[in-house]
Length: 410
Length: 226
Image (cartoon, rainbow over the protein chains, first blue to last red):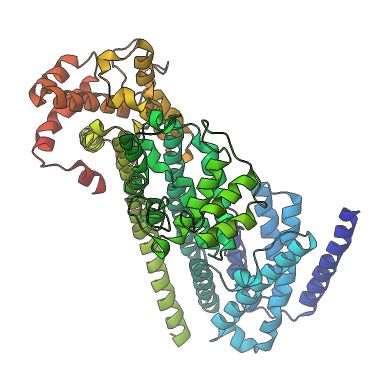
């Protein structure tokens, strides 16, 4: 039932595509460049489509093919641009062995985008479009084309009841390097086509490939961060095998509490990373002391309490963790100033440390990683947190925590 | 030439120059910095757990890189060698704290000795879980390998063991012996073990670089960076 409703909804997109194609066919097609230049543009567009990149691990692929289509639309006709695009998409889809559905969706969105982008071109006089103002025409086409693809993407997400990353982020929050690569190639192509410099067209792939390499290297730098986190947590798990689930639970809950307290998406994500690493200093703690069933001696307690300092010491050299280091150092401070290692009080303690302290304590009380103590129920643990709130824990954080704890899957 | 053409070409040239600078100079520099920061974090973690290892990581990695350079390893392999030298002992985290920090190795039971000897294997298994570090596993797994050993601990043929593993094995043995007995006796032991415990080419290279490393004329870290 749901599928047939979706199929019906998608029919509207095909109608839009049909109208777009009709609109492109009835438009005048005054060619101003030789066929050889058109062919070179089409081949280079295919190269650009294959040299696509995926700037974010979960993001969409990005290719500058639109710049080549814009040049064809301006100097030949928008219909020629659409036909080129279809051929390029089919060939690239075959090379990459993409699913028919993926190619079909791109086919629809690019067709509609091409028709929409051709509209502003009609406002420019022909001589201006292929003469002095050629870069303006090409850039105008590219901008509308890129925006229209985002809009159709949004329509697809809506029709499938999927989440879309949001209008403003899609249209305004474009990565400046992506935009730069797109605009540079488009402007260059406009000048090249106007001056009929056919042999220069393939050279426009140089900035495309440089951009691609840049994205891949940025990804490698970002991966190094995750690898470091993974390797450090593996070391901790080897030293203290019980900590794995504890860290995972604390990280997930701490992120939700941070969001609940209005810390923002980026900061909440950092809180999650800090929560994963908050006990990293325990690598240097004697496991026989940490797992000791009875009371600790003063020396043993001092040894265990050093883990907050050691954690900060391990992470300090890493630039990407510079914000996290004080949060980890102070995650055992108490609002009444009796915590460790620096005996900070109240607002001196970073809010992120206060969040980690509450979530860590809750997980410890409900059985998390303390095998020697009978675990409390969730309600008992929350009651205990509230009882200790003014002195040991931050009351605002405890209140936010009590609100989110039911939502977080155990 | 049209004004627009001049503007477009100038802007495109500037943008491409910036892109080239960013991609070929800035990003590799940042990547290298992150790499070194991560190494420092790992060595700090190991040294905090085992205070007797303080400074060992740095000495082993600098000397290993100098030997690698002497043997003509390329920059990429030198970086891997440096990282492997730093990460070789992360598997020691699985060995009980008190056993290493509070007891003499002579008092270890047979089971404890085996647990210690397996630390290379454990380190390698941990690295295999991290995609971008997994390629270091064969080096780390065999970093205590004996050259003439008929049955390598990982069950692979000697020809399949990377040269970097033999470098780490010889350098680690030398640094430990130098700490316990002094440099002269450590050097003598190295020469005596060439061809049996250690790879002869590695021993020759180590002997060649030792004077310059000892007097500080060569900073292995700088060799990699250059």
